Structures are given as structure tokens and as C-alpha cells.
Image 1 (cartoon, rainbow, N blue to C red):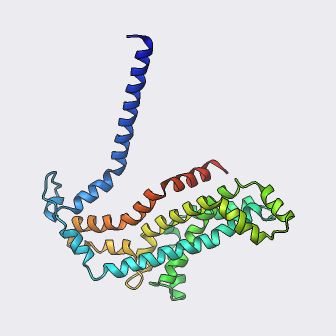
Image 2: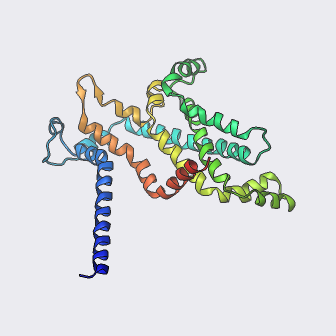
Image 3: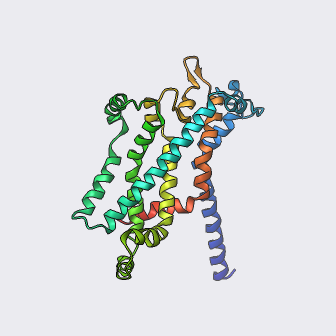
Length: 279
């Protein structure tokens, strides 16, 4: 066997080993989701202790999906999530534009102030937020949750969109100014189209964060505006944990962000990578 053939065989072996390693990593990464889905197909008696071989059933999905409470929780989650995503983009994109292209004395200081608010742990602010919401009669309201999530996620939008805006040459805006275009016209005609992928990835990331958020939802809502994560907690009772039903509702809950993330994973990865690489 010649050296060239040995080299080709070695490359082929390394290629197959690399592919195998990727599959192993994917299986390890998705194992919790796979295990949750398999658990949702079991009877409660098959969950603890877990049985490897069992008879699949859809009874858990019938129980959780035919519940009279799940519709209101899904509606609450949809309204709160979509509204929060809309207002985060509505406020975050102009703020990022001002930081990058505005005539601010210390734009980086303002940007890092926005970014630093994301470092505050939620448990540190829950008591003052609860008291403030109680005073303003915002407890257990969709409006209160939207305000909470917008305030928490606008800095993330600013961080991601700023990275895309910094990639836009300022000469384009200067040329538009020379041609007589106003700043607002330049913003809609030049900046938004060029930063579209960053805005989309930011919106999807906010959607995932708000849809999955549990801490503020469980502390600031009760009945009227409880989102789907709070409904999931109802299967944790004093009688014990209904693992099969909890897995079924969890599978249903993760489907929207999972599908959105799968469809738009390229935009999300590009947005996160640009935000990480550029300062």
C-alpha cells in the first residue's frame, strides 16, 4: 500500500471518528429531551423506578391537553411572550442605534450600564418588584408581566443589535446625509435592512427567554395571567410528583421554542457569535 493510499485511509478514518464524536455529543446534549419525551409515554407506575421496556400510551397527553386550564395558560404565554418580544425590539433597536450612531459623549459607558443590569440575579429584586407591582395593582396581570420581561430583556436586544450595527459602515449614513436623507429615513431604509438578521435573532432569543421564564411568573402571577410554566408546576403536589404528566406538559411547552430555534438556528448562532466576537 502506497503512502498516498495510507494517507487517504487515515483521513477517512479520522473523518468517520469525527462524525461519530459529533453524534455522541448530540445524543448527550439531547438526552434530557429524549428522556422527557419517553417518560411522557409511560404510565406513572413505569416512571419510578424507571423501566427500560414499557407499553407506550398517550393518556398523559390527553390528560394535560384536555384540561380546562391549559388553554388560558397557553393564551397567557402567547400574549405575554409576543408582546414582550415586540416591545423589546421596539425599544432596544433604536437604543442600540443611538449608542452606535448617536452623538453621545460616552456611548460605551451607557452600553455597559445596560449590559450590567443583566448580571443582577432575579432573586435580588423579587421583593421590591413584588411590592411595587402590588402598589401599582400589577400583580397577576398580563401588563405587569410584559413590563417585567421587557425591562429584563431590552439589554439583551441592545447588546446583540449593537454588534450588527457596528458592522455597518458609517460612510453609508454620511452619504445618505449628503443626499438629503433624514436620520429617520436612513434608519428605516439603510440600517434596518442591513441589521435584519441581528434583529430577527434578537427577537427569537427574547421569545425563548420569555416563554421559558419561571421565577418571576411563579412569584408575580396567581390565576388570571399565569403562563404555561406555572401550569407545569401544578403537577408537583403534596401527594407527590406526577412525572409522566409533568413530562407530557413539558414536552408540549418546549415545542414552540424548539421549533423556532431549529428553523432559525443559523440567525441565532450568527447573532450570538457576532455579539461575542465584537466588543
